[in-house]
Length: 193
Image: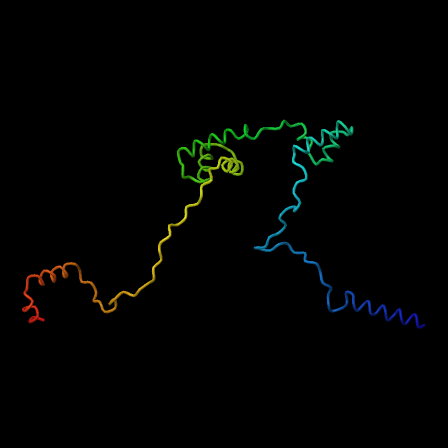
């Protein structure tokens, strides 16, 4: 009987800690990154092997270990199409991009990347901006941004007599007054007031 009571009490204590309790258990943060927050930025570990190294690893597995090409490609993480594809030299592949950029820069030396790229597009070239930008930077055509000219800052000073000055009535009035001062003698000017 005592054992049944103890079981009953223990069951009640477990129920109080479970789903019927008012306090809910803490959950892991399951939301995605919100606006302005950085989400997952890719794998923190760099690539293990370059594609050329993977190709040589597949050749070693096929020749020395007698694996099939499909299995060797699967182990190395290389597509089978890459195994049969001829490697292309980037310098030869980018030669038309280099010549087109040279022509554009020769005519317009101060143009930046986006103006040059838009001109190439207008000429009918279908290269994407990432390829053209890689070649542009490889040719060291990137120009430094122009900085604003610095103006020497001076302390502000209040204008002398700016509030007491009368509004300007025109150059004609001042010219007539200057002419009158030169023609009329000083004694007569004092008398007139």
